[in-house]
Image 1 (cartoon, rainbow, N blue to C red):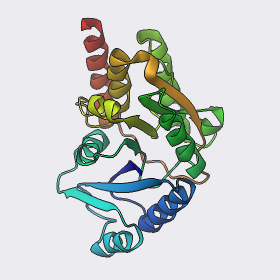
Image 2 (image 1 turned 180 degrees about the horizontal axis):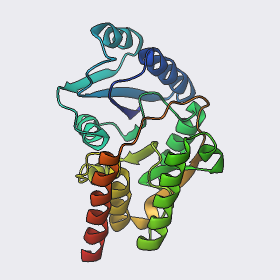
Image 3 (image 1 turned 30 degrees about the vertical axis):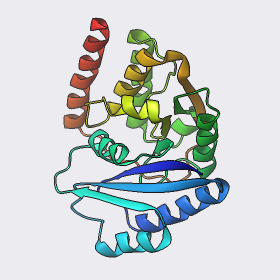
Length: 238
């Protein structure tokens, strides 16, 4: 039986997050009956929202479950590297703890990955996605996509979608990333494009309704601006 590592970073999650996780994993498993799903949740230094009872609930309802936690918050990229490194499945998919994209989107991404003609499959958001996000976040996302077209030649136009999957070859590339926060996705696709540019496949994904988006402050934008410069400079050296 093939195995799929499902990695979820977690930081100060919303109430009932553990029930969302269990329900989503069970629905996905029901569609992937010949695949063993191994769940990894990485608690990225949460100060609220996670209790022992939540973890116990997941353990009782999901057979293959691994919980990783540490006290200091490092960022989503850091947390995902911890989870990805802990797994050894045939494939790996990561998304957010609230499963913002439909279960069908994740299942379709897995099937695309399992077709054996792609080492990395990346979700791509359509215009319908932007209708459901805050105005500032929408403008920021579109601005980044413009910059990608201007400075990079990547196989996909949307690097920041929070749903991606990869084979073990892709896992090795993901673990070479170093950015801890927002732009780790861009760094990953940039690195993967250097190793196997024809093995990166996009797939359209659908956002669930009523998803709550985290705030993006000025400090985060400044830091990620520096990370973008770092990636651009790194690209010029290759």
